[in-house]
Structure formats: structure tokens, C-alpha cells
Image (cartoon, rainbow, N blue to C red; front, side, top):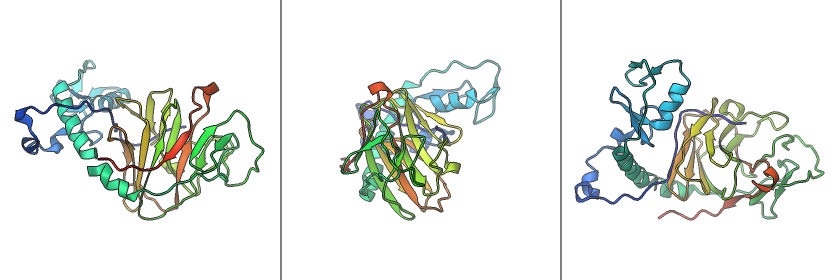
Length: 297
């Protein structure tokens, strides 16, 4: 139940002491364009260098090579007879992390101004789900409730939509995922399939990221894109720009970017989409909580 487009990821930043030779003023001389991975076109995460001298995110390059019969440099197409052993370029990682922290923090402050009040729609909730009275929390219960199987309600997967829909402009909201081993978050169109088997992909009307088995993050783009995050996410920020066809996900605590769907041809109403996933015998019983937005400093 998961898939998405190009590989992008977010992660923990280790606060970097700035030597005199790399002060705030002098750092502006280094263009951030030099730190963009040619595959995901985001600032490097765990950058590695190929024998031909080109740099990529470790997981981006691994993703490319795992899906190909040959090991080619994605930039110059040089073919390697044996798959090179890749090591993290720690100096470049420190510089990239500095830029990412600085950039994602103008960015989060900017998009948090579009925060909207989202509540869960009980008429769409799978019968196994338990919603709080204020419509801000959802958990997977142990017992199926006797609820009418209307056209609006999910009947196979434990999903629920937000009450609020939007078909223009920009929106932002945050969801606490602390303590969970599995979850799905994102947005969905009004006319998605709510019965039987569902595949989370943009062609099916879903723009989502998911967590499985405590540390396996992926973007559901079809095929799914594994996301390498340096720390477990506790609060996910979801930003949508309808006219730009953009859905972006952020790790709010570390002020890091997780993934973005870009250039999406939105034509229908969109709804916030949530799944706390099965409680796993209590291992995944923590709720998804729609949280108030506190602007980052």
C-alpha cells in the first residue's frame, strides 16, 4: 500500500561549529547549487563520490543501481564493470547539512503561515478506527464498530479523511506521529476508491508518505521511493500548493525536508488523508494527532 516519484529525504542535522574560514558571511560565497544531488535535485544527504568524480546522495545512487542491470554514473553514463564500494564524503555532508538546516528552517517559517484547522471526518473512517471527540486524534481499535457502509466510508483499509476540502490556494497542517511504528499521511482526491484493495499512488488520487516497521520510510509515487532519514520523525508537516501541483512533507522537529511531489495536475478537491495503520497487538497503538502549528524560530 505504498509508492512515489524521485528519491528525496530528510534527516537529523548535527550542529556544525563554524570555523573562522567558514563564517556566515563567507559561506554565502558557496552556491547551494553545488550541493544539489543530480538525481533528486535536493541538497545532498549522505553524499558519495563515484570513481568518475560525480557526487550523489547515497540512497539516490543506490536506488538507481538497484533498479538497473548495469552500474552507470547517472550523470556521465560511465559504466563500471564492478559495483563500486561507496563511502560517505563526510566533509561534503557537513557543508550540505549546514545549508539544509538554514534553508528548510526560511522555508518552514514561510509555509507555516498557511496553517489551517483540520479535523477528521467520522463519516469516512473505517469501522475499526476510534476518533477523538474533537476530531483531532485517530487510533486503530481492537473491535469493529457497527457503522453503515456508506459510499464515503473506507471498508478495507484503516483510513480516514479530513472534513476540510480545498481546490485552490495553499494549506499546511502538522500531525504528531510519535510512538508509532506504522502510519500513512498525505492528501487524496474526493473520488478515490474507498472500497477493497487500494494502492497509494498519484494516478489513484493519493499523494502520501508512509512509515513501516519503525524505520522504513517511503514516498508512494509508483514505484515507491525509499527515504533515508537520520532520526525518527515525531511531527510531520504537510504543505500543499494547489496551483503549483506541489505536496511537500517536513520533519518539523529537525526542520528538515522529507519529500515533495511536484508538477501534479490537480483538478479535483483534495482532502487530508490519514491512516494510523493496524495497532499490531499494541506495538502501534499510539494515535495520530493533528497538532496545533507552532511557528519555527
